[in-house]
Image (cartoon, rainbow, N blue to C red; front, side, top):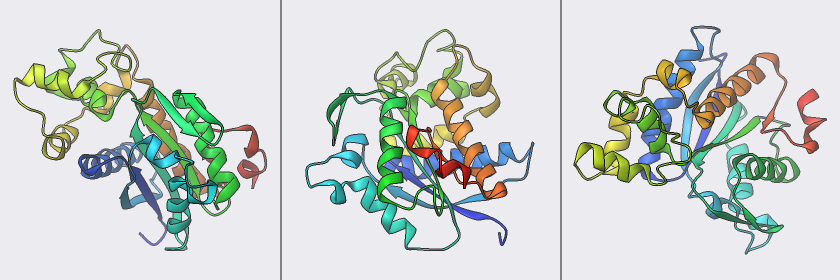
Length: 237
């Protein structure tokens, strides 16, 4: 791994740690079919939901996202990128600009702006935000063999709102997040979910973000994604 860079994942809860590691490693392996991966998953951090990351109650310097990025920056020189991968099931988000209705693109850009303005994101390493809409289990419903035939025509990024409950309805068993999420994630059919209709936009976003960070390591052209008006200089370094 001498020529590879570390990728740090920030995920929501305990059930997401193994699942995010698994699906990210598999996506990087999938990417290797087209070009060599330049990243490996080095660390996974539990960071809470989007409101926990962005709450401005303690002042800008104490916003959790900023504190966590600064702590990661100090750990090693071979950091290639940080990827925030959390659920997109919030209705509203508290920000330094007040209470905002949740939109994956708008809030993703807001998080990137915070990172660019207050950390070394885009200067020392690449940074990307991905929301699994409406939640990580929506990806399981879309791509796992036990569920994908039962959800063929469903727009899973809009309905069902509670994907965990849908899994329980299909399996007739309680959904145990820490145990079941990784069990199902291991069997997600990546090729299927990438081709699925209705399109899983957030999974394609995940795929695109990994490709962007991977390419940034190869080209030494750091990125922050989704892009914002603040990044003209960042993305041309």
